[in-house]
Image: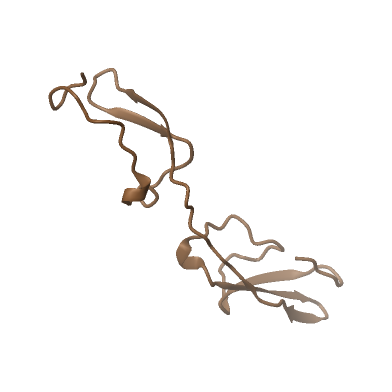
Length: 116
């Protein structure tokens, strides 16, 4: 966002018309957008010693990640009681759910509790 006017300028960001606590910088950053945030309307109020102005609205659109995480590597603990799986991108409990996000690597062999 560009701002013209006599400094210093003070900023206050709003979401859907409600003041965002602590959002007082010229740029709104470091915010994690979720699917539920889609449609949120952002505005910013800018104030200096001569008055204030409210920006036009900016509507957030969040699209789902349609590319499931891919397994890069699998290893087991030296005690053989745990597997470590490394993915190509960060995985959370939410992003790992659903049949479309699961890949099976053949059938397990051996007895339960043993690799083989």
